[in-house]
Length: 218
Image (cartoon, rainbow, N blue to C red; front, side):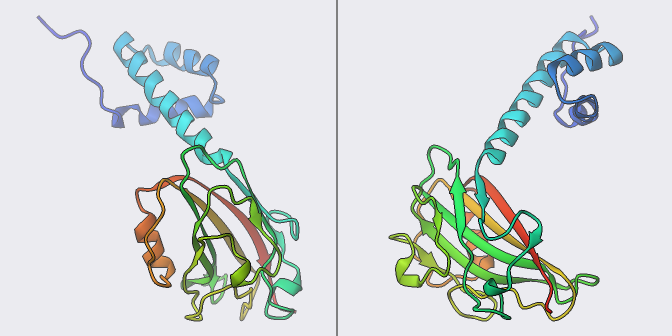
């Protein structure tokens, strides 16, 4: 007897998931997709489970937020936070830290170095980790002694700890302030580089968020 409901791999659902999001990402649109492609009952169940899991994961990742009162998202960073000013760290606010978070990590980086029209590397400006999960943000011009209790520092690309502001040699660069919620407290990594920290947090990220500002030298 021929099998009526063959098994379906997750990979085979990719075109269907694309169709769903093209139709608006709602369950009503999912129903219309199902009718349009005449999906078999077994496939409908798997399709619903995969889309539901993906939506849940995306919602968890997008819930956490990082922002700055000093500049709007994707707007210019004021010069006082750069090498042309006082070179102090901007104020940052954290919100919607997920349940189960044991520590937070922060990486500030410029993926447009040295020239946005021909980027060759990502330049790291600030690395922090093991911030307590109840941290709601960092004050402007925060000193190492003022960091939340337990916070440890990594090395920026000047091979120093602490914040160094935007100082792009040419063009307008983007500066990503990336916040990570982790399910663990990391051991002391002894002033890790960004690469070392990313290796340590791999597999421990509960959620992540970013805030981007731009800067071009006067």
